[in-house]
Image (cartoon, rainbow, N blue to C red):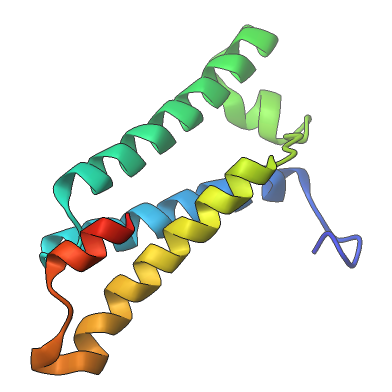
Length: 121
Protein backbone atom coordinates (compact mmCIF):
# COMPACT_ATOMS: atom_id res chain seq x y z
CA UNK A 1 0.00 0.00 0.00
CA UNK A 2 2.86 2.37 0.80
CA UNK A 3 4.33 1.83 -2.67
CA UNK A 4 1.07 2.91 -4.33
CA UNK A 5 0.38 5.80 -1.94
CA UNK A 6 -2.51 3.97 -0.29
CA UNK A 7 -1.20 3.67 3.25
CA UNK A 8 -3.53 4.55 6.10
CA UNK A 9 -3.00 5.50 9.72
CA UNK A 10 -4.74 2.29 10.79
CA UNK A 11 -2.38 0.30 8.56
CA UNK A 12 0.67 1.74 10.30
CA UNK A 13 -0.58 0.12 13.52
CA UNK A 14 -1.93 -3.13 12.09
CA UNK A 15 1.09 -4.10 9.98
CA UNK A 16 3.57 -4.57 12.86
CA UNK A 17 0.82 -6.18 14.95
CA UNK A 18 0.06 -8.67 12.16
CA UNK A 19 3.73 -9.66 11.95
CA UNK A 20 3.84 -10.32 15.69
CA UNK A 21 0.60 -12.32 15.65
CA UNK A 22 1.82 -14.43 12.71
CA UNK A 23 5.26 -15.14 14.19
CA UNK A 24 3.98 -15.93 17.67
CA UNK A 25 0.99 -17.94 16.43
CA UNK A 26 3.24 -20.14 14.30
CA UNK A 27 5.79 -20.41 17.12
CA UNK A 28 3.15 -21.60 19.59
CA UNK A 29 1.83 -24.10 17.04
CA UNK A 30 5.31 -25.49 16.41
CA UNK A 31 5.97 -25.59 20.15
CA UNK A 32 2.74 -27.53 20.71
CA UNK A 33 3.83 -30.01 18.02
CA UNK A 34 7.13 -30.45 19.88
CA UNK A 35 9.24 -28.83 17.18
CA UNK A 36 10.29 -25.54 18.82
CA UNK A 37 11.74 -25.43 22.33
CA UNK A 38 9.79 -23.77 25.13
CA UNK A 39 12.47 -21.19 26.04
CA UNK A 40 12.56 -19.88 22.45
CA UNK A 41 8.80 -19.42 22.29
CA UNK A 42 8.80 -17.70 25.70
CA UNK A 43 11.59 -15.31 24.67
CA UNK A 44 9.86 -14.40 21.38
CA UNK A 45 6.49 -13.89 23.07
CA UNK A 46 7.92 -11.87 25.94
CA UNK A 47 9.87 -9.62 23.58
CA UNK A 48 6.77 -8.86 21.52
CA UNK A 49 4.56 -8.27 24.57
CA UNK A 50 7.15 -5.81 25.92
CA UNK A 51 7.40 -4.03 22.57
CA UNK A 52 3.64 -3.73 22.19
CA UNK A 53 3.21 -2.72 25.83
CA UNK A 54 5.92 -0.08 25.48
CA UNK A 55 4.24 1.31 22.38
CA UNK A 56 0.90 1.45 24.18
CA UNK A 57 2.48 3.13 27.20
CA UNK A 58 4.20 5.71 24.97
CA UNK A 59 0.97 6.53 23.13
CA UNK A 60 -0.99 6.71 26.39
CA UNK A 61 1.56 9.08 27.87
CA UNK A 62 1.53 11.24 24.76
CA UNK A 63 -2.29 11.55 24.63
CA UNK A 64 -3.12 11.27 28.35
CA UNK A 65 -5.91 8.88 27.52
CA UNK A 66 -6.49 5.15 27.42
CA UNK A 67 -8.69 5.43 24.33
CA UNK A 68 -6.08 4.50 21.74
CA UNK A 69 -8.60 3.98 18.94
CA UNK A 70 -9.90 7.54 18.70
CA UNK A 71 -6.83 9.35 19.98
CA UNK A 72 -3.99 7.51 18.29
CA UNK A 73 -5.01 5.27 15.43
CA UNK A 74 -7.46 7.72 13.89
CA UNK A 75 -5.27 10.79 14.16
CA UNK A 76 -1.59 9.99 14.44
CA UNK A 77 0.36 7.58 12.25
CA UNK A 78 2.82 5.33 14.00
CA UNK A 79 6.25 6.29 12.77
CA UNK A 80 8.24 3.10 12.75
CA UNK A 81 11.70 2.98 11.25
CA UNK A 82 12.93 -0.59 11.58
CA UNK A 83 16.58 -0.96 12.44
CA UNK A 84 18.89 -3.32 10.61
CA UNK A 85 19.03 -5.50 13.72
CA UNK A 86 15.22 -5.64 13.82
CA UNK A 87 15.04 -6.66 10.17
CA UNK A 88 17.68 -9.36 10.69
CA UNK A 89 15.83 -10.60 13.78
CA UNK A 90 12.52 -10.87 11.92
CA UNK A 91 14.24 -12.61 9.00
CA UNK A 92 15.83 -15.15 11.33
CA UNK A 93 12.51 -15.74 13.08
CA UNK A 94 10.79 -16.45 9.76
CA UNK A 95 13.70 -18.69 8.68
CA UNK A 96 13.46 -20.67 11.93
CA UNK A 97 9.70 -21.04 11.48
CA UNK A 98 10.13 -22.12 7.85
CA UNK A 99 12.65 -24.81 8.81
CA UNK A 100 10.36 -25.92 11.63
CA UNK A 101 7.42 -26.24 9.24
CA UNK A 102 9.26 -27.87 6.32
CA UNK A 103 11.57 -30.31 8.12
CA UNK A 104 8.94 -32.78 9.44
CA UNK A 105 6.95 -32.75 6.20
CA UNK A 106 9.85 -33.20 3.79
CA UNK A 107 12.00 -35.62 5.73
CA UNK A 108 9.30 -37.87 7.19
CA UNK A 109 10.76 -40.43 9.58
CA UNK A 110 14.26 -39.14 8.86
CA UNK A 111 13.40 -35.67 10.18
CA UNK A 112 16.13 -33.74 11.89
CA UNK A 113 16.32 -34.35 15.62
CA UNK A 114 14.91 -31.45 17.68
CA UNK A 115 18.39 -30.58 18.93
CA UNK A 116 19.40 -29.50 15.40
CA UNK A 117 16.50 -27.05 15.10
CA UNK A 118 17.14 -25.82 18.63
CA UNK A 119 20.78 -25.15 17.72
CA UNK A 120 19.60 -22.91 14.86
CA UNK A 121 17.69 -20.76 17.33
